[in-house]
Amino acid sequence: MTLAFKLPELIYPSFCSDISPYADEIQENTLRWASNYGMMTESLKITPSGLLGARAYPKASKETLQIAADWVTWLFLYDDEIDDANLGQEPDKLYILHSELLSILRGNKPTQEDWAIAHLLANWRDRVSCYVSRDWMERYSSIVALYLEANRWEARNRKLAIVPEVENYIAMRSFSGAVYACFALIELAEGIELPFYILESGVAERLQRLACNIICWSNDMFSFHRERNSNDVNNLVYAVHKHQDIDLQSAVIKVQAMHDKEVNKFEQLLLELPTYKSLQIQDNFLQFVKGIQYWITANRDWSIGSTRYEQFGSAQFLFSETASLK
Image (cartoon, rainbow, N blue to C red; front, side):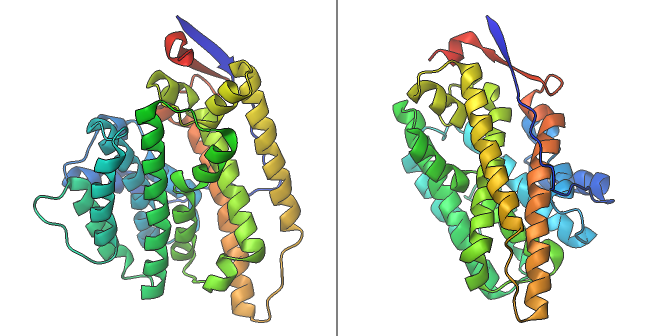
């Protein structure tokens, strides 16, 4: 039996929204890039990842936007590769793959025995390295390492059929969503580089953390039916449903309220932005903050129109009753 429940409307009153004039070209190029490495999956064909990049980095040059959009595509392909190889419940095997991926991101060359996803990452690394500093690349590798480790944590949950406690899930979700890595690419897209101490402390750190929650929790609402139909336990709606013993529609409403609270905190922080003595740092910081806002609205607007989540309009989810009751 198929059930439906309504998806709340997600509103961001003061956030900017835009799309790059290069959007269609970027989408074509990123599909060609994946195809050149033998990774044109059926899922990617219905996932306009290049258009998500074009919404998330609308002011980037065509060259840097292509690199940023290709990273978004790589993330989707990584998910598909893990699913196709049935590694989503194999944390030990993922550890081996992740070690290889991190070594490549840090400069090593893939071998003929490595997966296509590793060769794709090596190509991306070589291209992005032409635009960023060595310090930036090292910081980026550390961010990606956290993303991969969070994915291993999710794999353990699937293997043991453990629905994570809400607090634990929230703590890990901002990493498993790869959002911090996508935020770091704002610097590439805008042609800036902010000092580490600004990005990892104070208002910038709080804005990124709130934005991660906003994006990841809204994504959990958008992707709920897809994940439950595949019996995935890693979803905030499902965690709230199971651990707070409420029905699914109430769980969605609860997650929306949590999401909206983070939006309000984010908007309040926008009124408390610091002023830096360096005019260059100040300008770069404001560009970075605007880039975070672009990502929030891009995630919502792209998800509503994306066939990856099999949206029916934007008002309801459909899911298998059997899967939802497990």
